[in-house]
Image (tube, rainbow, N blue to C red; front, side, top):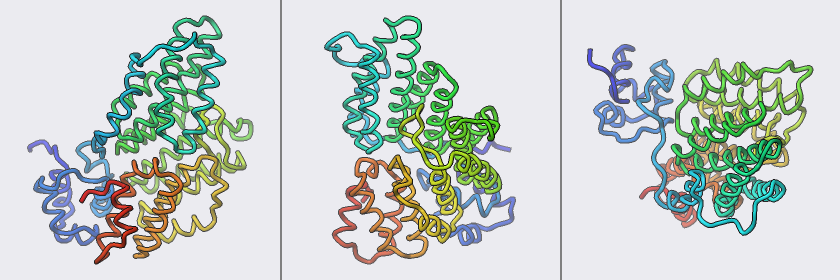
Length: 397
């Protein structure tokens, strides 16, 4: 039997095993017959993870069983060019020389100044500050000894994590993976190491590498599981975030039982910490009950239960989100829920709200493009507002 290499080969083979025609598969998955035919013939081009998830539900297989490769298109050329100085700095070839010899206090102050810009989604500002920060961190590590070297490595690990996050954010996964490897090498304690792996899991999810994410996060969740009654908030948060990564990956991979189980234990950790808080060892991330709730809402929209997503958002307070991008990501799920319920005006209103609050974040969200494309598909004419939004999120013509 020839090896099955493409997505279309996998879909066709499993469809036949299930005794379904192309028409039946299309009808049950909510897709067009022409799409299924083109997919099986290899004429469809890049297949989105959302499409594979719909097919996987009907075919009763994990989403990853259908995927021939990661669900990640390449980065935009503009982003590659703009982020080139950060890439060079990660490779140890940052441009320019420091005005003075870097010190641990100066490096710590510089990194402390970057964090609020990152949290506020001011990515252009972070992009300008990261190259000299990484350059100075390299120089300080090279010249420090004993405890000073360990502290410098700890700061460099955090700076490399930020770089990895933003490289994944702009779909530059190869360099993000390299940054993660270097950040892990610098991690001097278990919480920092867990922070690095947490960022790695997010990048893998964004790249569509679901099985790899689930296995990595589950292994680290198992290894780091604390005794809840004696654990610190930081330990509970690190464990809880791995459980959320497991749940997210499992939900997207059509493993609803695993998603529910991981979320159940994440709720235990969230109840134990009491309220959402910024992680001291990873000050651009957060954990607590609201963080768990938005993952529950995200899983619901993946499982086509938009009413559950909207019910959850009705009980959330924006003040519960110390890191705003978590709230904005949840609002995209709310927009998708409105589209599923044919409330297209409400969906556009949510997208405009996010655009006003976090434009640099929204422009990199291909999820936002998918949502707006669904709105446009059901509209005979577009308002100037919709046309402007389509141009802003780079929706293809």
